[in-house]
Amino acid sequence: MPWTTHSVFNQPQPLSNTNLFTRDSALVEAVTREGASWDREWLASVGLQLGSAESLELGRLANTQAPELMRYDARGERLDEVRFHPAWHLLMQGLCASRLHNLSWQPDVQPNAMVARAARFILHAQVEAGSLCPVTMTHAAIPLLQNHLPDAYASWREPLLSDRYDAHHLPGSQKRGLLIGMGMTEKQGGTDVLSNTTRAEPLGVRGSGEPYRITGHKWFFSVPQSDAHLILAQTAQGLSCFFLPRLLPDGTRNAIRIERLKDKLGNRSNASAEVEFQDAIGWLMGEEGDGVRLILKMGGMTRFDCALGSHGLMRRALSIALHHAQQRQVMGKNLSDQPLMRYVLAQQALQLEGQTALLLRLARAWSTPASEHERLYARLLTPAAKFGICKAGMPFVAEAMEVLGGMGYCEESELPRLYREMPVNSIWEGSGNVMCLDVLRVLGRHADVMTMLNDEFDAVKGSNRHFDRRWRQLRLQLNNLREGVARDVTQEILQLASAAVLLKVAEPPLADAWCDQQLDMRGRRALSDDLATRLLLRASAS
Picture 1 (cartoon, rainbow, N blue to C red):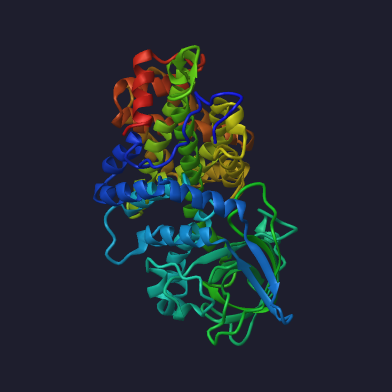
Picture 2: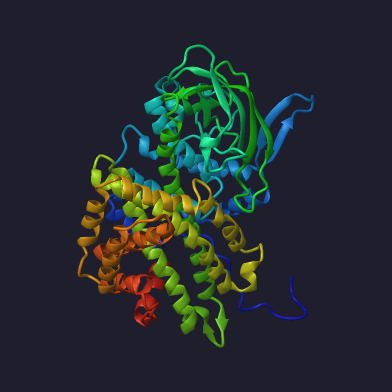
C-alpha cells in the first residue's frame, strides 16, 4: 500500500533463498579436510533447499503452532496422541531424507560418515532445531539395539535404516520409517537417575531380551510420539535399560499414559511429555543392572549433537546479523563498514571458525572408534564441546540481536526463537556441571588420555606463543585436579583443542588471531582490518 505519512527506506530485506552450505567457507573446507568430500554435492543441494524462504517458513510455523496433546477421542476412549502442525511433518520428512537418524549405520556407509552427518546436522539446525530431537535420539539408539536387543532390531531393521518418515499409528514392523526416543529422568532425581523409582518385574524368566512389566513415571519423556523409547527402571540387580514400544507387536497400545506436555521456554515445535507407566511392557536390553552404562553410550552421541545444534543456531544468528549489517546504513555507510561493528561481526565469525574446525575434527574421531587415540579424543572432547559451545550460544545470539537493534528483538525476526532455543542444549543430556565432572572423570580414569593430548598439542608446539604458554599451564593444573576447577579445566581443554586444529589447518593470520583472542591472558587485541575483511567474506561467501 502507498504510505501517506512517509517513505520506507533503509530497511534490509530478510535473509532467505541462500545456500546455507556453500556460503559457509569454514564448513565447506572442514568437510573436505576431515574426509567427507564425497558428500559435498548432497550438502550443497540440501543447503540450497534449507535456505529457501519455504523451508524457513516451515521452521516458523512449527514453532508458532505448537503440538497438542489429545488424551481422549470423541467417544471418551483414551488416545494419548500428540498432533502436530503439517509443517512439523514436512520438516521431519526432510530430516529423514537426509538420514540424520541413521546415516552412520548404513550397511554401505561411506568413510567418515559422522563428518558428513555433522555437516548436515549443522545445516538443519539453522532452519528448525526442535525437530532434531527425534533424529538425534534415533541415531544414538540404533547401535544399542543392534548389540543388545538383536531380535527386536531384526524386525525393525529395514524401517530404522530407511530414509522415510512415517507418522502412521502402526506397530514398528509394519512401518516404512521409525523413530526412537528416550525417557530417563524422574521427578525426584533429574540427573541423579540412580534415585529412579520406576520398577520392572519379569513376566517370566529374567534376562536380556525378555519382557518385563514396568510401573512408574518419567518427568521428561522426549518425543512421546516415537515408535519406541529407551527407558531406565529398577530391577532386582539395579538400574536397567528397557526397550518400550508405543504399540505392542499385536497392535494394542502399550500402557504409557501421557499426563501433559511441557510448556517450555523454547524448543516449542518439539513435544516433551510427562508420562506414567501402568504395567507397560518393555524388553530388557543387556543385563539387569547395566542400564547406566548402556545409556551413557547413547549419551555421548546425543551430547555431540547438542554441540552441533548450538553451533548451527549460532551460525544462523551471525548470518542474519551480517546480512542486516551489509544493507543497513548509518551516517552514510553500511553498518558492516563501520569500524566497531566490523570488529564485533569479525569476532563472531572468528569464534565460529574455531568451533567449525573443532566440531568436524571431533566428528572424524567419532567416525574412527577403532583407533584408541580417536576414541579418547571423542570421549574427552565431546563433553567439553557440549559445555563450552552450548554455553557460548546464549551471549552470541544476544550480540547478533543487538546488531539488528529493536527489529532483532521482535518476533518477526528469527532471532528471538534462536535465543529461546539456546539454553536447551546446555540443560538436556547433562547440564554444564555434569559435563565438566565427566571431563574430570575421563582425565582421572584413562591413563592414556594425556598421551593423546600430548600427541595432539605437541604437534603444533612452537606455532604460537599463547598456545604454548597455556598448554604448559594446563599440564601443571592437570597434575592436581579437583572438582572446584572442573569448569576452568574443561574450557581450557576445549580452547586448546580448537587452537590446535586451527594451527594445523588454517591460514596463519587466522589461527594466530584466534589464539590471540582466546588464549592471550592479557585480553583481546583488535583484529587487523585485512583479517576482519577476510573473516566477513568467508562468513558470507556466495
